[in-house]
Amino acid sequence: MKDRCVFSFIASFALLVASAPLSAHHGNAAYDATKEVILTGVVTDWIVANPHSLLKLDVTDDKGNVVHWVVETGAASANQARGVRLTKQLLKPGDKVTVTMMVAKNGQPVGRIHRLVLPDGRLMVNDLP
Image (cartoon, rainbow, N blue to C red):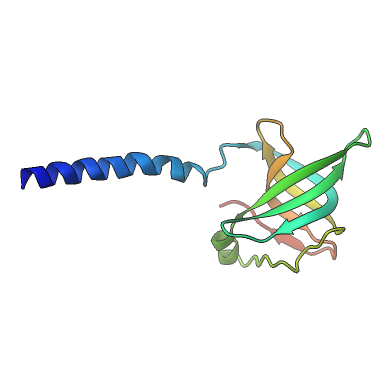
């Protein structure tokens, strides 16, 4: 009986330790939550997936250079709870969109969408809880 309790304790502890990195994925630590950036660009790809959809777009900077951005949405379940329905038909390559987002702290052209203005002017709100 004592061996069984010790084994259960060790197994529980190991699972607890192993699960910590899994929860880190769902945080926003990689993004600068203090700075909101608004970019307008042309959609190159729209990938609707679970847990996060990805918007790829080309944005022309002040010097005329095209920067390829990858911006993720919040979790599909959280979007659905807010009434935001992301479908494959929502965007297509060539669409012009405006994205309000948090950008990556490491300076890479990566972000997390807060708001998205669609080509027809509709606003999709994806604010983080």
